Length: 412
Image 1 (cartoon, rainbow, N blue to C red):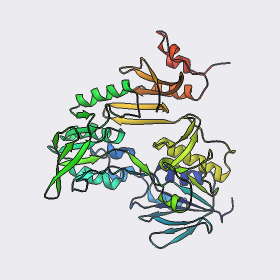
Image 2: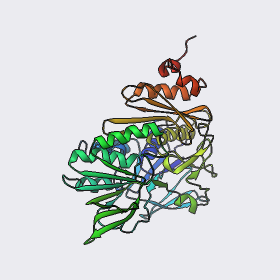
Image 3: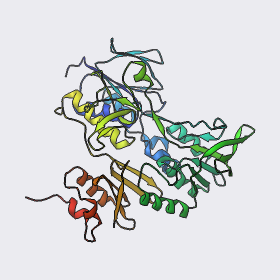
Image 4: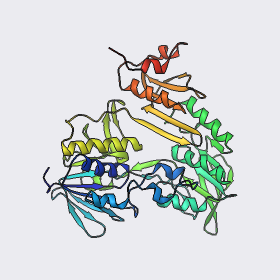
């Protein structure tokens, strides 16, 4: 490719880093700029809610690559800088530090931001969110024996945090407004296994109740008042009720947004020079039958590689359509999900080791498989969902059903 071609990537998360890495790996020789508003070089985020908090890894262990990687691959890495303006006509971006970069291809990998619920007292000292390394550093400094932690929200991040805090001598209470953990993300049977695990780990889980107000004393949090009328003493509160896609830059530039930046099957926005990937992008999915926005590291990395291959011509044009998959490590429990189980209307559980695997159906079609500490079942599930040899609910419920056998590649 011409050395004059310019690619600018906005966002230093998994998607942004993987786009830059894949471009160079695919032979892109043009100018390449990666802009990250965080003050750290791109790093792994999954350990933030687990290994990093308990001191198993340090900040330097999280970096994707040494700083020399960017120099050796001629990647202009701008940290602590932010794209504050996008001129589609001139194909330029304006930076908060005063710089301007031109582009031929622009990749928006801007991610998502934690939802900040409108709860009185949420601005008190000791009320935190967990999304970035800076957030995790503050939490790590405050998680100490005898501390009382209230996690508002029973989703993946909140529960990952809740699973490791008891090992630090922290008393943990999870407040979840739904009637089960990870509601809307996983099936009822799988959610029950995780509820039993967390309660067995010493975590108090209050379901069907939300946070009504956060009480403070001397400017610091001291308690959480629930919608059920309880007062929960707290030295630290983590708000973990979900995230919102960061669409402000795209919206200001006149790009279409709707719970994410809208892209086509090739991950292009309505402006063919601009792509969007990762948590911020809403794309047509054959697995959902509708546009979806997927919050997962794997999705961001897969989309990054797809866009890099398209820009460099390393792959023929084709729709982005891999089987989505997710995972969450909560203590000794590793949840793996293949497919998109949201909106399922029927569940069949099959033996999967110590914990059964859940096959989720929608209108009699298998749409997702949830496993706990069963990596072989997870891989079988991904193979099944990538094929048309999907079992019916009746077949899955048969006594002799074998998930691994039915998913095994056929010979001949």
